[in-house]
Image (cartoon, rainbow, N blue to C red; front, side, top):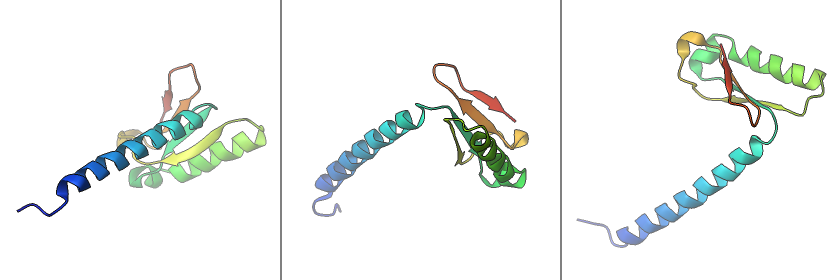
Length: 98
């Protein structure tokens, strides 16, 4: 048996999803306007030294006064190669370092 108002709830969920999706796209585009280093810091990355890798990138960016960011992200999907860093700089394709 369906709950009362179920159709409205689905529409509200879909509307909220579209709103969040658009906000995420805008945030991602804003984030990628500057050079960006993503360091995978899921469990396997942390075990392999990802937090130290992240700090090294952040320290070097600060030391050289670069207009870039190094941020922590979740799993990048290649546990055997951890720690992993993905470097984005438009208009070039991303480069992955293990």
